Length: 472
Image 1 (tube, rainbow, N blue to C red):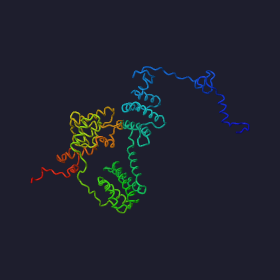
Image 2: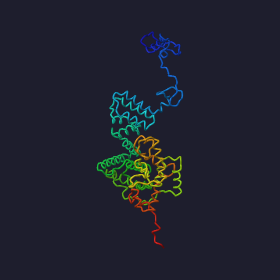
Image 3: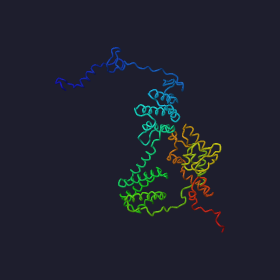
Image 4: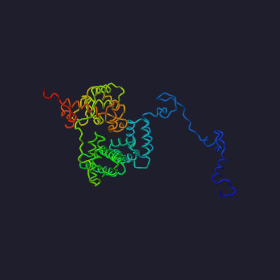
């Protein structure tokens, strides 16, 4: 304090002066500055907007306060015109509204619920008003979220813009694949990680060369599976063998690693051969420890199959079970009776169906597949389920994640559809293929399914046609 006689500092003295000027308000009883015209505090003296009296809602008939268009708040929240009203308000706020905004609003209203469509239009309005370029490609890039999901607004904009030829698709799939690869590399022990990272870069460069050359490049799933195998090998060497250098790996380590998963021996051995050849070319190892190893596995089919009673129980479940999901019944029936794979079912589109002939196109099969009455009834249930979702997705199997776009259902979703019945799709399909191959000519089965003739021969393992044996 600057004054010797003062007991309060400058800030505290000013606060005390303001408190002394206040008086209790006769209306609310709280201390405040009383206005001369009303004798009340400022809060009580301000004019308030009078609420409209409750009226009868024209939608539900209840007497409530109205939110808009003669509707109560609950009815207004789900009114189908609400997204269009919000879009018109946004157009009025913009100096140069785009021509496609009304069409985009109609697209949102057809695919999403009312509240979600309004939320997305509001978020789009914030992008319009952020003083950044507002052409479609710039809007699409700014609408993306930074996490693993780019957000519902970005997905809707990408589907709309690419469908109308206004923007190019984003690199979201490549970004997610890069994240999956990096997570597998980060799981490798630190001392062995640089070599696996270099191997991943080598596979990516090889894929780019294959694309330029027009050959068959590695897919993201192939590269991720290879990195997962190398992650498991690195953990095995560091944890169980106590080796922190790739140069210390010998054939006994590789054999012990392959013995841990006999069914995956062939696939693992292929990846290990690729990795150690790469490491040897970089002088990381001197000798390829996987050289000379063979799969030594049986060439015939060794998987599980279903008994006749189990097949009958599944048929009754998918044809008469009212609680069975339409997607489960469709995949199960097509796999059980027609030997369809999960990929063939998830890629099935409405344009592949012929309602008059009751046939469908499945995958790469050269001829349409005629459907029996039970399979066609299950297919109609799935189409009815698709129509209830009000989607423009051309695929027959549409999920909550894909109904707003045009892509197929995810591999993870299809692989878990049949969890409720207790049997995977591969087991059901292999049961049908084994029955067809062993009762018909394998070449005819290969031609009907669009497979290589060698692919059907594995299902003939340990099978002897007794009719062709000489009589004793």
